[in-house]
Image (tube, rainbow, N blue to C red; front, side, top):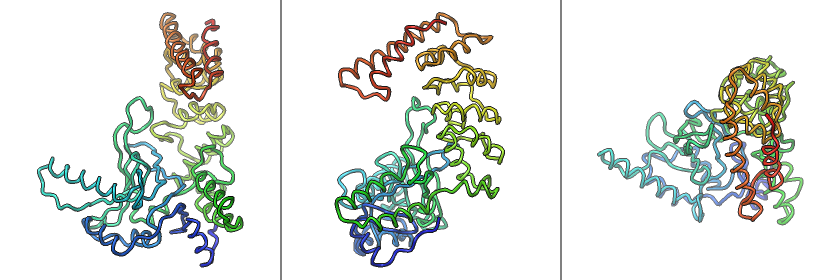
Amino acid sequence: MDTPTLTAAELATLRDHGVVLHADRVIFAAQPALSEARLAEIAAVCAGPLPASLLALWRLTAGGRLAYDLTLTMHGQSEAISWCELFFDGSSGYRDLQGWIDHELELAEEAATEAGTAWSGRLDYLPIGGFEYCDRIYVVTRPGPEHGAVVAWKQGLPPAWKHRLHAPGVARVADDLAGALAALALDDDPLAPTDPYFAGAPLLDYLDERVDRHGLDPALRDRVIAAFRSAVRDWRSALAAGTLVTSPELARTALLQAITGDDGAAVTTLAAAGVDLAGPLRGSAGAVAVAVGAGAFVAASALVEAGAAVPRDVFDEVDGPLPAALATRLLAAGAEPCADDVATLVACGAADSARVLLARPRPVAAADLRGAIATLRTSLSRSLTEVQAGRLGHYLGADGLAARITRLDEFVP
């Protein structure tokens, strides 16, 4: 998509509404620019001069929000990075620029003390954005060949968070801030999203609010949206041109959308085009695990048919009525279920699939199954009690929890 050209008057109007276009990306809830005096203060705590691309941004706007997708490889996993904030002075929360600078100065001093080395009192890495305390974006200020490069940091999560990073991760985004902003993209067209939680939704909501309550011209809003949509990853054109496999990010987006839409035909087409089905697609999860976990059982069947790897513990991903035919195929491809998996299938309304698992050559022991069903029932009953008392919100709701309990009670192997 081509980016529409906006006039100086239109850009000024948008600035009044907190919208700034920079490096072909849309920043909203945009803050005022930094003064030269403030830029000098920040530079004074950096190991080298502020990079030109960062100065260009901060002389236009020093903070705001972004609504794009960014995926990087960390520890061999495909990690979504939440770069939805640009830090700014005066924020009372996690977006406070000076607060993050002070935090990094403290950490740098502690690291030098622990290493027994002298500390310069300056930052090699300047924090400029991210999301709360979870993800951060840094610009390298240390003189040398890496000066100006942009790197991302992501917090690790406890082992219970399957497929997520379990240790902090760091990855290079681009050689400079302009390149880092160019790396921001839209996996979903915001005007025709395939995922209900698409990245562009916050900007659309912001613009609608400016129209409804602050007098932004709807036509100008639409021009901003057109500019915003220029970042959509157009994998369909690449597929038609036979070049999809040359762009791993486009191929990844295509495969994720095929799974999200539970589109088996699209999966087959992508596989025939040479799209890699083997690598991590979301965190450490491969395509089959993602599809099964999303309840995209048609897509999962197509992936197995196309030769995608089936993890041994794929039945751990189930949270819906997985068809018996797919259960059979997953077993044939090497999946090894346990008693908990059988109980989950029963609770999810897939009793026939549970029986397929029980009929395999190495079935789950009856005592183990009884124990798994009892444990799951206890957990569901506890959640149901909390939901009914108004102390817990649950994605299944009271009716969904009750239905799963009933299925467990009525199951006959």
